[in-house]
Length: 94
Image 1 (tube, rainbow, N blue to C red):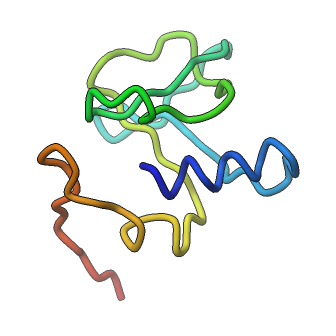
Image 2 (image 1 turned 60 degrees about the vertical axis):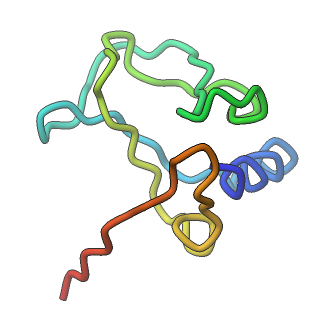
C-alpha cells in the first residue's frame, strides 16, 4: 500500500489524479449514501494509511473489498512483503 499512499499524496495536490474507488460485497458494487472513511492497511504499521479520507458507502462492512481503478505501476509493482503481506496471485485476463 505504500506505493499507493505515495500516489494519493500526489492526489491531494492534484485531485484529478485520484483513481476511482468503489466498494464491493459478494461480487456486487455497494450503493448507499456516502460518508468519509479513513482507510488503513493490514500491516499494523502506523504509516500504512491512505492520506486524507475517501468517500465510501455508509453501509461499508469489514470484509468488503475496495477496488481502485487505473493503478498502473502503483499496484503490484510497488507492493512489498512487509510484515507477511504482499504475496499475490496474478491472473491474466485476455
